[in-house]
Image 1 (cartoon, rainbow, N blue to C red):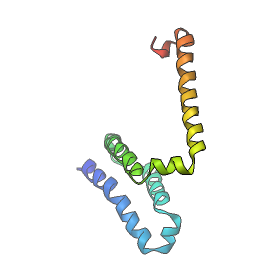
Image 2: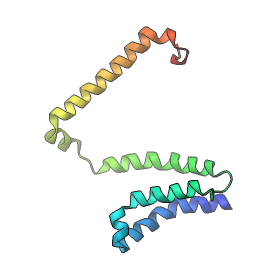
Image 3: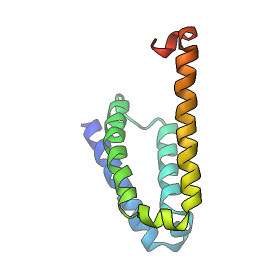
Image 4: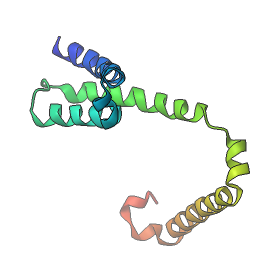
Length: 119
């Protein structure tokens, strides 16, 4: 029963914080994200979480992160990115390609020396 209540708390607490930030100007200045972090910090440090709450936390995290990433990208327009920051986008793309190249070549040449490399 405690774990069910904890799951409901994880889903309802951010909504309540958003409502409070809309109602009170001082909380709006602090920000909903900072208030959520503070609430999580307080809950974690005061040992009020029930036994086995790690499982619920893992399930909630595993479900919300894959849901949040596409939601962040829905409003973005890659065409506008290229128009506004063409050279920056190109340099980032080249940096990613260079990083992948260095990692793969290092793995190819030095992979036998490290037992964690999977070779």
